Picture 1: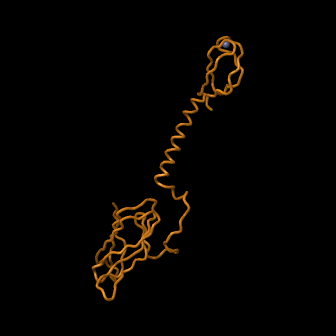
Picture 2: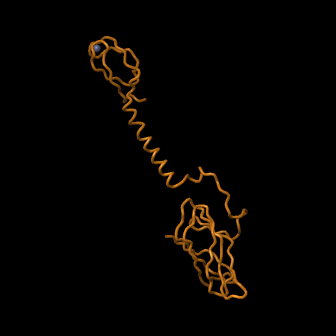
Picture 3: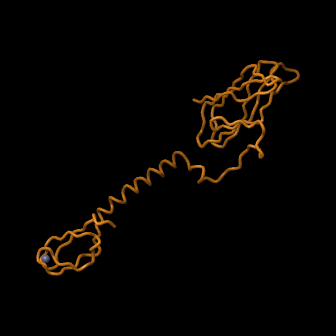
Length: 184
Ligand SMILES: [Zn+2]
C-alpha cells in the first residue's frame, strides 16, 4: 500500500477530524487538534480508494473474458485436436492463409470427357471461414502452367476439413496446385 492512500477518523478525546496515511492504521498518535494520544482505527484502510485500484483490474478481466468468449481460447490454451493431415506431412501440402491443402489429384473418368482437379482442405484457423474461392493453377506433364480452375466453399468451421473439386477443361492437365484464395 502506498502513502498516497489516506483514511479518515475522529479523535477519541476531542472528536476532531484526523486524516492519516493507511500505514498508520491501528497506531496511537497525538491528535493534531488537542495533542492528546488517540488510537487510529485499524479497520479503516481507505477502502474506497482501494476500490478504485481494483476496479480497472476487474474491468480488464471482464474485457478479456468477453474477448475469449467471442474469439475462443488462443492456441496455447486449447486441447490440441489431432489433425487430419497425415504425419509425416504429404509432399504436396500447401498452406495458404491458414488453410491447408493436400492430396491434389486430377480425376479423369474413362467414359467421360469431364476432368476434375481435387484436393483435401483443412481450416487451420480459429475462425469460421465463409465464401472461400479457391483458384487452382493447372500444370501439364512438364510442370508448365496450362490454365486455371476454381472451386467454392460456402463455409468451413475451425479444424473442419473438406474436399475441393474444380472442373478442368484443359485436357493436358496432369497436376494442380493452389494459385490463390479469396474470401468473403
Ligand atoms: Zn483531539
